[in-house]
Image 1: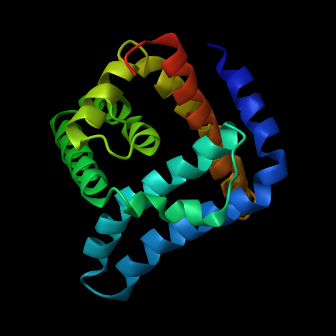
Image 2: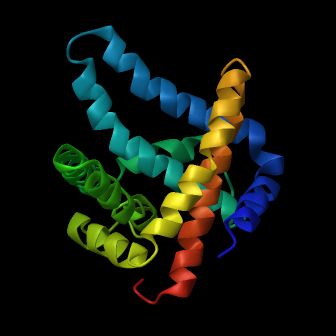
Length: 194
């Protein structure tokens, strides 16, 4: 796959949706950051919000790349399959942390392997968390290095965004998410696991 071509396609798809996409990503970030600053229980609240909001981003960006209606409320669709997404998020977090503690590389490997879980749940909210995790692992089998390369390609853009008084990061986050959604769709076309 030509990652640069995928990034260009994501920018093109985003053109009519930049403002809304930036707004959705900004609210996502604020909803995760603010609770942890409020009191000692804020970290727990942020942890409980992280999975459903991540799933909401997947709903939003999958709709965007498929040409479906995009609206702000999609960010909150991730709260509907609540038990599935909370269990998925907890398992992914624990396994990633364990992998990072043992050695840095296994943590990255685990995170990449489960990175498509939320897209799978977004397409099938009735799926069990075990099946979603298994499908993500199978879907990324043989493609983890390519997925890592895709994510690494955005690091210079994030650095540039920070140098632009952080404002530039607001444009990079939707672009990155759109590219990941396109990559998920491409993986599905290349494999027959889903």
